[in-house]
Image (cartoon, rainbow, N blue to C red; front, side, top):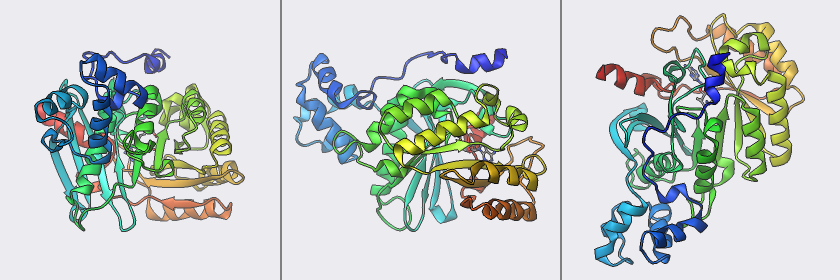
Length: 371
Ligand code: SAH
């Protein structure tokens, strides 16, 4: 029980991340600029360069006097994430970036270009306190929450990579954002909510990306789902269920001892009713652990009258884990049973496998190298 309690404790902010324009609501940005001794309207100009033009070099900010550009950039848009390493696969269409934060903490993001969209998977915390035993990030525990600026910077960096034509296929637009990197987004609620506004607010207040292209993935923190519902944001919700029964879920997703399967699904249903957004059920298929046909049957019964779709993820084994992905025939049977209940089911493609694509694996490898 002590461990579960720890999960809810605010992580120690050893040294706060430098404040950034993206930490604040648009209305507060102007006041902050004034407080720092700049004319208030400069906040809007800098926001335009940051969110609309994705221009991080202040030398290009030609509507601002040359002698104050650098000072404004240092004050309002300090660089919060520094690229340590990039690894690519799928002929460059998948790219994973490892970032160092101001205090040396490492986080990662993954950018994936498909024919019809480009998606970035971002981290909301350094580490994670949810302690799911199959997840690489869960093993090391929570280091700290990221600030809204630190989360937003990952997205803006991805948008720049797309716009600059750094991915094969030429310049494109970042279209989708998924909170499926390191961390539990709803355990860092305020910073995540601010980031969601930075994503969806129109230029120049934000990136102007449609809420329907944003997915927040959660272990099922019911209080967080309720708060998110009240935001009127209409982003897509994904619930990491991983098994339909409380008995197994208590160990696969330890927070289940606090929020049971039924409560989590009821909160997701409320969210769906309020927003009209079908939600996803994430289910990592683990050989002989949660991939039995009877569990598919139980899941089918649970979901058949719900507006949800199931996203099966072949387990990406973490180093040293005794668990592995399901046999192909078990995966097929699992899909067949769910479909027999009319539950829409997809098996997630395993992009990024070769580059330690599973959550937390690149940062873990980098830390191991440093040891
Ligand atoms: N904390 C959030 C976001 C985490 S990562 C959440 O739990 O939803 C996004 C998804 O990847 C989650 O569904 C998570 O359970 C899953 N995942 C983590 N480690 C995995 C692994 N080794 N193999 C397959 N899926 C994994």
